[in-house]
Amino acid sequence: MKEKLLLYLLFILSLQAHSQIVFEKGYFVDNNDKKTTCLIKNTDWGNNPTEIQYKLDEQDQPVSISIQQIKEFGIDNQSKYERFTVDVDKSSQVIRDMGYDKNPEFKKEILLLKVLLEGKASLYEYSSSSLTRYFFKTDSLPITQLIFKSYKNSEEQIVHNKQYKQQLWMALKCDNTVIADVEKLNYRKNSLLKFFAKYNECSKSEYKNFNFDKKKDLFNLSIRPGITSSAISVSNNSVSTSDFNRDFDNKIGYRIGVEAELILPFNKNKWALIFEPTYVGGYKAEKSRLDSRTNEVLKGSIEYNAIELPIGLRYYMFLNNQSSVFVNVQAVMDQSINSKAYLEYSSQRNETLEPKAKGSFTLGAGYKYKQKYSVEFRANFGKNVLVNYKDWNSDYTSFALTFGYSIL
Image 1 (cartoon, rainbow, N blue to C red):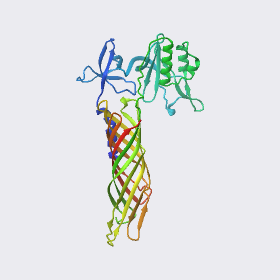
Image 2: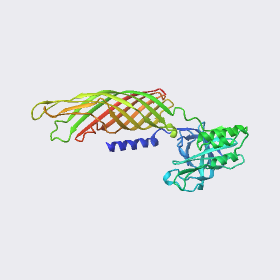
Image 3: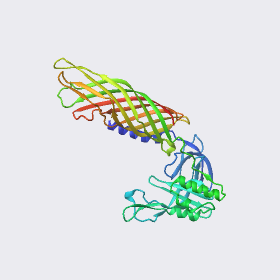
Image 4: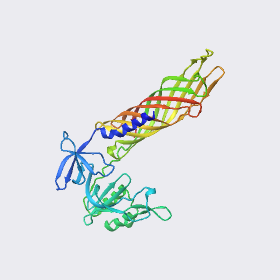
């Protein structure tokens, strides 16, 4: 089971490399200031890119160009990047790696900075896997990093150098700017964007906001009813015969849940975190067997219902503007409800058990239409529902067909 799960996880992580490549209308400017209109592979970069792929025509093979070859590129109505040689501080934000020096540790690098707002005063962003830095420039000041650094003091407390506030107060004063505006500024994109927009408006400067609204539909809430097909096998390790053991038949049951889905705002919204509290019920089976010693009929029955709490990761592959397919992997915690098992070893010996499940994993694949309707096939290849009994083992396998309707 673990080997199957590992292979499936590797499969999901490799999908990004093999799924549909989306090239969208854009342009790039080379070192000779030549602007080329083209189609650019839009990966909705979480980290600032160091190269891009483009095609002059849909039928062409993609061509890669590096940061050394382009001064600027953009994707229509989505994003714009400009190349700069900057002093950048990449001091760690991870507590165990933080130093004690409050001053930034600058290194000169060539970066493609993301343009957030462009005007008399322009705002830029640099992101890597572990940090985010903001830069700005005006018609009289060159590109400069807005300084924010976390560090430790002598008492091992985490403190912050917020020099960016002083930088903005000195560089972007305007008639409607007061010190309180700067003091309340957070080192966050939306907070800085509002400040730069206000300055440009006060300066009667035209500006363009490239931070296009990506919050739309980043959260979905869906009702998820479905049907299940489940089977349970039970065995006991403390007896020498198999008369306690039962392979209960496959039964059709039902499930009803609510799924909360948080779309992650990068890589073209292909990744999502999902959490789906679900009631799973309807499994009830009987299995009798003949005692090999006495020819008695030994009864066995089991009923299993549970609240499942699956949490996991989903990956979308978009077919067009209205349709997508997806795959997920989830870790599941269970709480059994109104569940019991009765097993006879002989006419004088029997056991009544209260099932309790161990955590498990589910794998799923599905189809979504108009971000509103969905259907998913999901498999749980095995979990122990008698985990609270030392001498007992069980194997619960379940497959589900689930339908979804987004209410939010």
